[in-house]
Structures are given as C-alpha cells and as structure tokens.
Image (tube, rainbow, N blue to C red; front, side):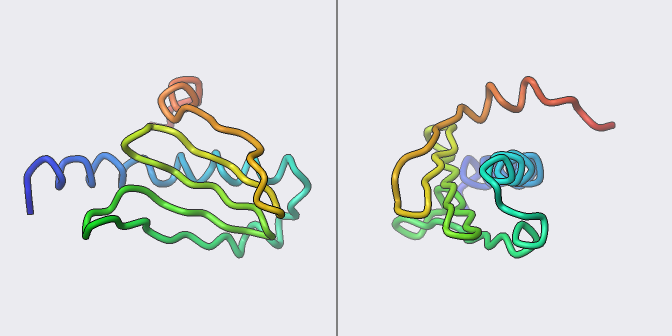
Length: 98
C-alpha cells in the first residue's frame, strides 16, 4: 500500500468517532430518536479501489464524509441538500478528550 494512502487512512480512522458524533448530533437535531440513532449505518465509499470517504444513513437521512474535500454533506429524506459542514472547522471547535 502506498505510504501516503496508508497515512491518510490512519488520519481518517482517528477522526471516525468525532465525525460519527457530528453526524449523530446533527440528525438528532432534525428529530431522529435515540433508538433510531443506534441503527446508524456506516459504509466506506470506494472509488477506483481507493477509499475516499464514509456514508452514514439513518431514518432516511444521509451524511457523506468526503475526505478529499474535508466536508460532510447532509441530505434529507427526499434527497435534498440540507447542510454542508467543514470537518476541520467543526473538529477545531469540539472539546478534546484526553
């Protein structure tokens, strides 16, 4: 495996839980219950054999975390764009856990 791809994959693995928390907090704010949030489905997005992001789906809502663009794109139950957030901006504002 290419070293750069491996290092990027490690960075994304380290960010996985904070990103999941951002997704959960966001869709909870749109009325998705805690019971439904426990059923959050997460899949890897792969293009040309290389992972490029993750897709989160719950209760008809979808969030796409695109690593190369450093964004999470949220869409609603009918596919409409609801929100796009900068991962770097959001992570820099979240409290760090030791």
